[in-house]
Image (cartoon, rainbow, N blue to C red):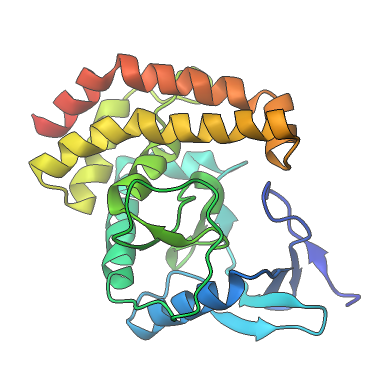
Length: 256
């Protein structure tokens, strides 16, 4: 198509374009299951995701385009107010609750990048600032290629790392991570036992990402090898160590 506009920012799914009010992305064996899942979310009233519209003549999936600002890169300030994290915590909880009602098709195939610690329901697996859109109508979640069976807490741990953010990098971290983590988790609505398990999972989730990049570098698997070469592995390792060192801080913030 001659009216296609490339959409940047993705590491895993290249060749993503916008045409009119739709987005076209490379399809794969996982696409039918993901589309069934997105249709379910809309059917049960969770409309904060793209609506699947099928496959085009070039074999690409078609999704509705969601206008707005992708938070990262370039709009991280949208996460500065604590109320933003309260809104997003409620959004993630509503998504997980809607997902819990989904029965995957018998022939469903999923694209599993990092195995989860369980399989309670279908989760996003990449809930991060680069997949969060802010529009005048509120927050939306995009990029569902890696949706697959998983757990609420594994998904939430990844979101917390990116959105608080729980980072050792002073250029990225904010001065009040304990308050921000509490806002997100309170809004999601975890009980005390789940809060304790979440704290344990925080470094496990970032460590899993570090190992994915490391293995990608060892085997030459893209895009992980390129990301490792660009220094992403160092960042994930540093943040994992940071999460481990401050485990007591996160637990205190969530339980007091």
